Amino acid sequence: MDDALSIIDYTPQHKQALEDISLPWLLEYDLLEPVDLEMLADPERFLAGGGRVLLACWEGEIVGMVMLELQGEGLCEALKFGVKEEYRRRGIGHALMRAVIQAARALGQTTLVVTSNHKLKDALRVYEDLGFQYTTYSDKWFQLSDIRMELPL
Image (tube, rainbow, N blue to C red; front, side, top):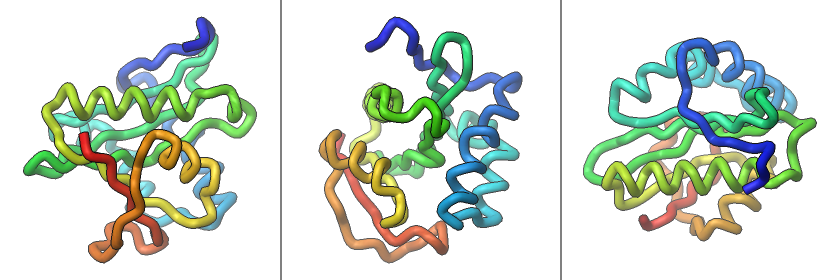
């Protein structure tokens, strides 16, 4: 991993950074839903449920994020994965997803899920690179998601 990059855990002082990272791409791709705003407004709910919120820090600036939600019976989901546009193509997304995979394993999870949209080609490429497999998507939490992928842990 690049010396300029570190992966850290969320603390309340980082709350604004979550919106600064997520809202631009959600708006750019016309994917913003009320549930997104709820998640960004209350990241502590993931922590209270035993999950994590991981942040990518590049030379002291928070530039990426991913939330890990434990859903029971070994199933967990990575949510709100994103990297600020000006920091993309530096390996930050791959580092964040490797960190969330490691965190899920450390928490004893057996399957990590991501749901996404076909428009998010860079994110889908990261998931594919890390071994996620496309699966049938039926129980939609996000109305605008049309892709579900899973990674056995």
